[in-house]
Image (cartoon, rainbow, N blue to C red):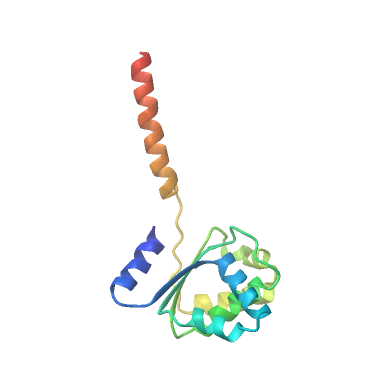
Length: 145
């Protein structure tokens, strides 16, 4: 929700915003490379004032996915804003990306001017579900009593 609110605020302020998942970014970059359109794909992801890359670590990246993600982040470094969401701690990025050198280089660029926001606690979606479940449970228990 926080990422969506920031992206929406940037768009409402007139900035160009792009939202993608890490897996989709990697797949699009791979397809573009196979089709000989790598430079066009890199320009596409370099263009927005804000790029939101969601769900790093939720799905495995293809073999060259970490490299593609690094290339996009490297192009954007010091030029545009990037928000990256993940459920993986920084110490485990080498495992998720499958390459400790790429992970270190990526983190070097990301953390240089970053604000890292760690969020603990119940998921926004699960909190809503839990509230609905509690209401249903109380209603059923009231009828049974």
